[in-house]
Image (cartoon, rainbow, N blue to C red; front, side, top):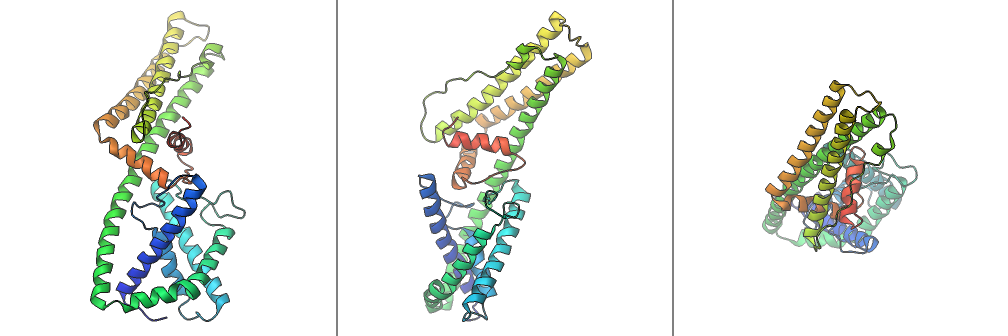
Length: 322
C-alpha cells in the first residue's frame, strides 16, 4: 500500500461508504420486505463503513501480507470505531441507530462479538480482494481530478450531514415532548387512582379509538400522528370530567379543594402543551414530521432507552400497526 494523498483517502472513504450503503440497504430491504434507503444520511453513503474502511487500511498498513494480523487489527480498529460512534450518537440524540442488545455478549448494544467477527472478515476481504483494484483505479486518476472529485463529494456530503443532523435533533425534540406528556398523564392518573381509593370508574378512563380518514402514502403517517394527539387530548378531557365529578359530588374520597385545584391546573397545563404541539404541527411545515418518519424508515432498528415508549409508538405508526 502507498502513503496516499489526502484526496485519495477521501475518495476511498466515499467509495467504501457507498459500498457499505449498498450492502446495508440490500440486507435491510430483504429483512423488512420493502425498499430501504439505509443510513443516517439521505445520500447513498454510510459514513460508518467508509470510516471503518479507512481505519482498517490505516491499522493494516504495514501487515498486509499477514492475513491473521489483518483480521485481528482490522476487527479491533473497526469495532472500536463502531463503539465510539454509537456512544457519541446516542449521547447527542438519545437514540441508538443500530442495536445489538439481542446478541450474545454485547456491550451496551453498541458492539457484539458477531459484529466484530464480521468486521474482521470484511477487513480480510477488503485488503486482499476489494482494495487492490479500487486502489489501482483511484491512483490512475490525475491529481487535479482526484482533488476536484474529493472536494465535490465532501461538499455534498457535508450539506447532507448538516441536514440529517438537524432532522435527528428535530426527532429528539419531538420524542422528548411526547415523552414528557406521556409521563405527566401517567402521574396524574396515578394520583387520581390513589385519591379515589380504587373507584372502578376511574380505571376505565381510556381514549376511544377514532376512525381516521382514508389516506395514502405520506398523508397517512401525518393523519395517524394527529390521531394519537387527539386521543391524548380526549383522555385529558375524560380525566378533567372525573376531577369535576369528584369535587361536585363530594365522593367519600374527601378530596380537599387545594388538591382538586392542583389537579385541574395540571390537567390544563398538559392539555395546553399537547394542543400547542398539535397546533405547531399544522403551522410548521408538515415536511418536518415527514422527514422524521423517513429517518425512522431508514433506520428501522433504531431504539431509545430514554424515549422507548414514544419511539415504539412512532414505529407502530410507520409500520401501519396503529
